Length: 265
Length: 180
Image 1: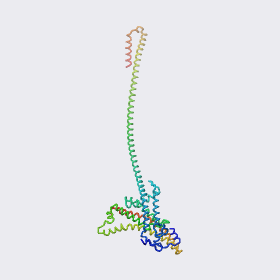
Image 2: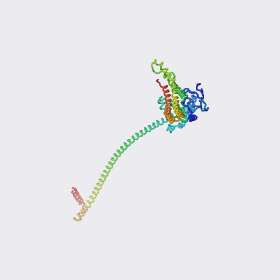
Image 3: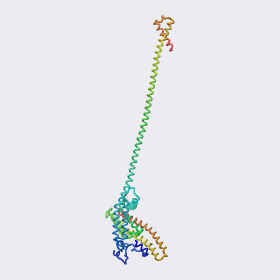
Image 4: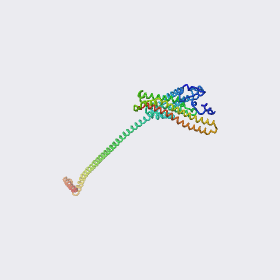
């Protein structure tokens, strides 16, 4: 990241930014291209995991009936996902999924938030590997829950055969199959990935664009300032997207689980 | 995947929609560690705390209800006792009043009796004294009269016993005349 800052200061950042800007050089081994085991991205994932574990363990070390401020805050996060997502979407049964949903929500929210936290400034979720993994878990989860609840045959019958006249079924069944079992994990992963990717790209465009104009012509300095102000404004927008996408990912997972548990189609 | 690893003049060409498998492995392990710790050590304890809180509140309400019921029962009991005590007191008062009346009547009757007795005794005594006095007077008057008559008439008459009867008859005549 300091390398990037130096590059910016020297005015050598290329404009426009491209996909290559998302694939930073490796940390270990230092500076290696195409070595992905230990990069800024994976380091941020480990930091997110560490921060969340330490935060929750520390604030819930000695739970009390009358909560302290720290305990209350940690409980509010869990309570929000538990009551406003799990129980609202799934009903009473949703309580047993609340721990996973909360883990998912916190992880996505924090890794998303790295997009606008100074010195991190890129979200791991702008690499599709992480959203894809989470989407696969959601996919496996709702199918597994459905099969356990209904049994194998009844679950697939519920999922694939809508209550419709028999002559439409040949059209509907492939559509249902595709939308439920093919597109769901894909859309789930791509929605999060694309939002974070685009957010980072937009911030890059306005930040680097400011430098590019300043370097091209000193008279364009006011426009550069405007460009950087736009960066600030878009950071606020990015904050909204960060929270919204974390919420949407969790809600959609809950919705798939709810669909798998539902008795009727 | 070969094009991911294909360097092109120091710049690698990446396809952002193809996941990097190393990142999947790292992200997967990291997320599973996170999920394991939070789902095993944190959220179940939160759920327990919520349950304990619900129990505490419901238990408190239940205890309060029990205490309320007990208080109501005690109140009823005290009211009943109070009513009973009032009835008893009224009865005792009535009894006392009746007793007092009876005692008063008794005392009055006794006093009346006593006074009657005293009056009767007084009257009897009076009568006895009067009779004594009368008797003494009669003797004395008779003696005096005889003495007087003897002095007037002479001593001859003094020994004559018959004269006594005459004096008595005379006095009885006097008495009956005085009583009339």
